[in-house]
Length: 109
Length: 112
View: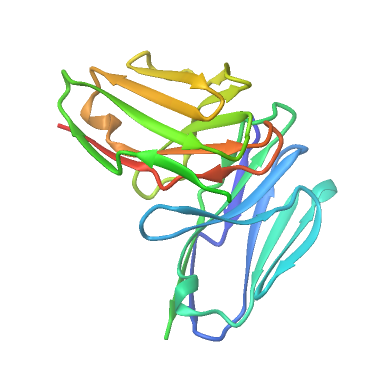
C-alpha cells in the first residue's frame, strides 16, 4: 500500500509565528486530505487537495502530485491551532485511505 | 450540513459482552467507513461500505462485524473483544469512495 510520511513529528511555536507541515507519499494519489484532530478526538476537515493549491483564512495547502508531496501552511498561529495535524491519502484503490503519523503542533501564548 | 453522528460517545464492556456502535449521516453519501485509533497513533481503516455493500475489509478480526442496514446507517457489532481492542472508533462518510471524507466524533471504547 501507499506509504505516508509526515514531518516534523512535533512542532512548538510562539503565538503569531508561521509554520509549514509536510506530507510525503510513495505513489500516485486520487485523494489527499488534511485534518486537524482536536483534544477530544474530533477530526476536522481542513483541505481536500489531491492536487493544486487552496487557501482558507490563515491556512493554505499545496499538493504537487507529480513530486508526491503536500504542504500545509499555517500563518499567524494561535493557541487554538494546537493539536495533531494528519495527512490522509488514497491511491487507485478508492476509499482505502492511509494516514500519516501526524504532526503535533503546540502553540504557546 | 456535513454532520456524521456516532453513538454512544463512551462504552465500557466486558470481554464476554455483545455491544454495537452506531453511525448515521443524512448527507446522501454512498460510502461509509469504520476506523480504529489507538492513543497517540493515526486512524487505521477497518471497513469500507459502498452503496451499502462491503467493499474493503482490512483483515479485521471476526469479533468486529460491520453492518450497513441502509444508506444512512452503519453499525459495528462487537463480540468477545480483548482489552487491546480498547480505542477510539471513528466513522466517516463521503459522496463516493474517491471523495472527501467527513468524520464523526467517535466512540471511546474500553474493554475490561
